[in-house]
Length: 148
Image (tube, one colour):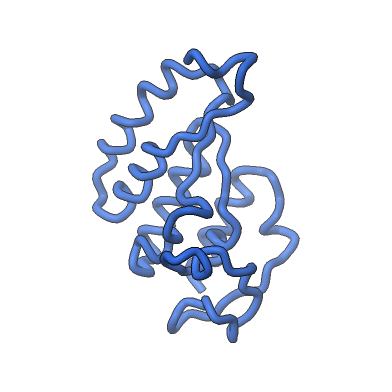
């Protein structure tokens, strides 16, 4: 790509993020593969960033209507696929929130009485293990927390 290499350290893949959410919610893996294939072919290794949502978008758990299984699929695609994964704080504990910004940019919710805790779900406390940089350890933590 023209703007990677010595121009940009890493490029965020917004269309791929949208397809991670769509694939997770409707179960069409072909959406993800169709978007991912040209990225893998065109970008140098480790010069493209993968993510699910960011600070300008509705939180993924809200986009998935609180569906734990869909959130597991999204986390799995993000953390086991190629690219450099970025996690918007709170995704790993299933924080919810939709626009306006004050509802998607709240501080990390640390307990069951937090305003953005998922209805009917016990909110877990953040542990040091949730912050480890290894992809698989984060994935395992994602999947465990989403279940609670």
